[in-house]
Image 1 (tube, each protein chain N blue to C red):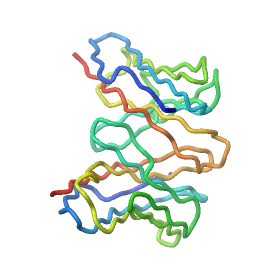
Image 2 (image 1 turned 90 degrees about the vertical axis):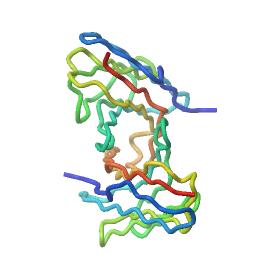
Image 3 (image 1 turned 45 degrees about the vertical axis):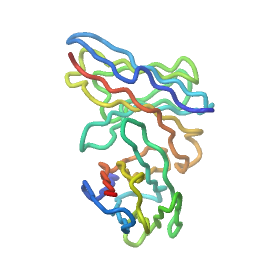
Image 4 (image 1 turned 30 degrees about the vertical axis):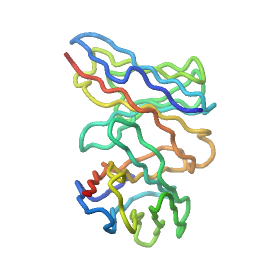
Length: 111
Length: 116
């Protein structure tokens, strides 16, 4: 079945470091791919999305590129801030609208 | 501002008791969803509804029930048959489930349910 695998956390970085959170997927067809972010005590918020191969989603300095050949959608940011500390979820959404989430990666940014 | 409102934020249940979690949206979205979030497990789909008066089971529906009498509302009842109900419950909505799977879901801030 369809699945999403993302790197286990927690990931701890110093402020201004470069961030990569790996995400790979298994799916039939051509899903849309998403990154959601969850701040403490809150629900998930859409961070960025890409709906077809080679699309790049970007928002708030975060980027991810839909790589069909490697079935990946890695999240990157050039310079992280303390306020980026949160849990990040990679997700795929099938044509029938069902979403499959990864297990989440907790990110800690140290000042 | 439009959004999704879940209440209460914290809920306690005694053994053998049913409890109902509220979810209301004013986004005029057609589809609504309930997820359960456990530490290290990601989100798991409990029930979803694509239209008023219709809903389908998700991956972990046992011990839960829902209704969709109004477009804006999708309450979740955790019944006494749910043996391990302690979790964080998230409600979500999306604009139109027929648009081919590229419309993101919008989430409420969740309800944390604990057993006394």
